[in-house]
Image 1: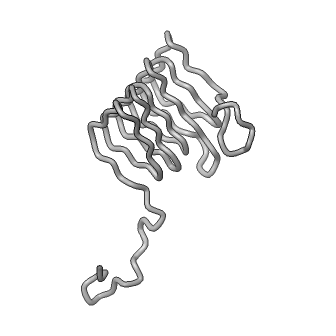
Image 2 (image 1 turned 90 degrees about the horizontal axis):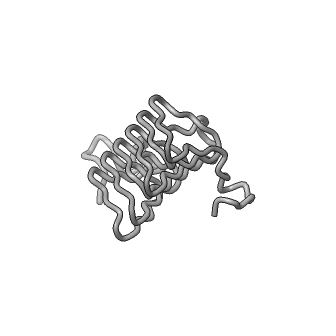
Length: 137
């Protein structure tokens, strides 16, 4: 999955090792694998560019996590935003609000918070809504 050169899935360009603690915001391009501990936001640097962040089984992120493709198999305490796909692996534990476009959740994954779908129509008024009482369902 991570070695593909199809232009759709970025390769892992950076690794935060198991014995590493980072305090502060992390901004990245391409792919980032976290095996250590981050206290602070982890954010893909550019909108509109494919990005991947992978939180491995023993990793921990305390802060916002945002990228196009997010894979969690460790612990995240904070809001998560996956602009295209969120994968919650069997050892995943997320405490906080989750926003996603597509979601893949494996048995064993734990979410303590809210799940919200990122709707392409977000912020747009439905054609059926008007001053006469809103949308007809």
